[in-house]
Image 1 (cartoon, rainbow, N blue to C red):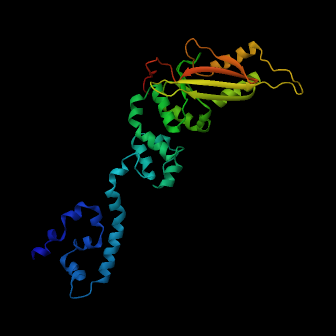
Image 2: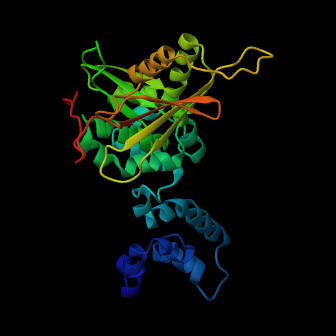
Image 3: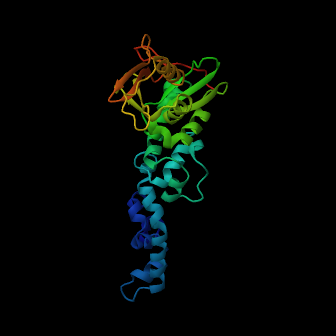
Length: 311
C-alpha cells in the first residue's frame, strides 16, 4: 500500500476540526477506501454517478447535526437558545413546574403551548435562576420570581395577617388580574410548606367594597416607586362615586362613619401601611378617593427582607 492509499492520508486533520468540512461530498470522498475514491476521481473514466448520489445523500443527512454542533454554545445561552430549547434549560434549573404539561415534540410552537408565559419571560426566569435560588425562603425572592415571570410591578406580600398564624397574603395590582391563575400557582409552589397562602387582587378589593359598602364607579390604581433598595413603596388609590338620587342636583356627600368603614376595609385587605400613615380620604371632582402607601414587604430602609425557613 502506498503512502497515498493509507487511511490516515485520506482524512485531512482540518476535516475533523471544522464542522462545515465534514458535510461536503468531497470531504466524504477522502474518507472512503482508495478503490472507491478512484471510482469518482479517476481522470481516465467518468465518475460513478451512483456513488456520487450516495455521497450527496450522506452529506444532506449530516448537515443538520453538523450545523447544530457548529453553534452548540448558543443552545446553552438563555438569550440565544432556540425557542424550542428554552423549556429544556428551564427544566434543568428546576423550573419545569411552570409548564402545564411536557411537550409532545421539540419545536417552537410546542414550547409556547406548554407555558402560560411568553418565551421571552421564560428566558428571563432562566437567566435569574441563580438569584432565585439565593433568595428562596424570603419575601423578596417570592415577589422577585412573580414579577420576573409576569412583568407586573406592584406585587406585595403580608406575612402578619391578623388572626391567622403562618399565613401569607400576596397582593396583586390591577395589572395582575390576567395573571391570577399563574400567580396563584406560583404562590402555591414557592411558599414555605408549613404556611397557608392566598392571593388577593385589586379586583377582589373592588368587589368587596361594592358589596359591603355599596360604592359605585370603583377604580383601583397602584403606582410603584422605582429604584433600589427594595422593598419599594407602593401607592394605592381607590376611587369611588356615590350615585345621587335620579333627578336630584344635590351634591353627594359621604358620611364620616361610612368613610372610616371603607378605609378600615381597605386597610384590612391590603398590606400594612407605612408606620404613622393611615388611610386617607379626599374628595376630588365629585369622587371619593382613599389613598394608602405600603411597601412590597415588611423591611427597613436598608432593604432587609423577611425570611422564612426554606421548605
